Image 1 (cartoon, rainbow, N blue to C red):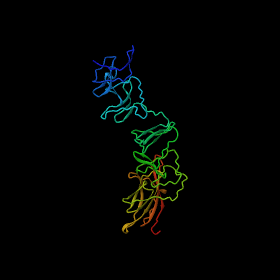
Image 2 (image 1 turned 60 degrees about the horizontal axis):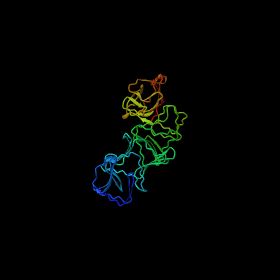
Image 3 (image 1 turned 90 degrees about the vertical axis):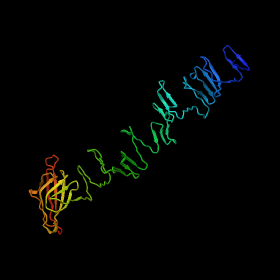
Image 4 (image 1 turned 120 degrees about the vertical axis):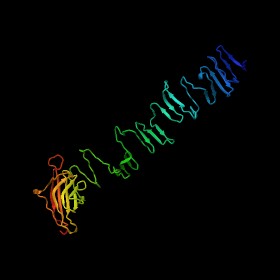
Length: 382
């Protein structure tokens, strides 16, 4: 038979309540079975010396442990109404601990359909199903142990991204633009614009600009075919300069032609307009044909020829029976009064001839090459 020892019961009313002025002492017992519906048990469990409460409608009928460290539930529990945690100052208000080997999320916020809204994994990964909003002006989003990377709101509609370094990488075509205002890119010790990791535009600390010098095959195009391009200072060209248009109001100073030395190795002397438009040849045999490669309408060429003879033999001859374009071309040479230019057949004599290519038909091909004498018999002793 159970025994209740009470020093004083001050009120037993019809409500069925018992008012006790002295502490209620509970004796340890083994955990009892769940009571019938409408009843609850408060007891000290002999198994762990813990104060527990058991009710059929609480914690799925399992015991609830009450201790100074909180309330311990032996199984999952649902809070069916709003809960408030109001702890003391400078205390951890809510702590959720997962097992070290746990593979599921120790903390989840879900919809009534159990769809994740906010999750925290056991390694600290945070998942947010929808938007993340920092609804305070001048708010800061920080990353890193020392908050080394930050995105700071500017109290208006902009933000500042700060980090060292910052690398932005996209797997697809991307756009960096402004809907209004100026887009400014500034580098403290220089600026590089790259294509696939190779510099195409470089600016150093002296603000010297280098465009496309990484690979010899790179080309640079400036402006539209009908646009105007202005160079406001000296322009230095270390390679070839090709102008497909008109040099208007141009002053040529310190102008120098490139003279290409063409070694004769056959009766046909070949002059390539891609190499130069002034050519120099020392004859080693008679010349019976002049061939131009890469000549187009409007081209002009100058041929300087030195007549030389080895071993004291007679000097060589130059005839203009064939003046053509390309190895398969036919003779299109034209001469003043229909007569071939004169030729100096003296050893060591130097003659100069000029050639002009013209497209008469207008079909883009050269129809005539006009041949004229630029000067004869510039001999070694003249």
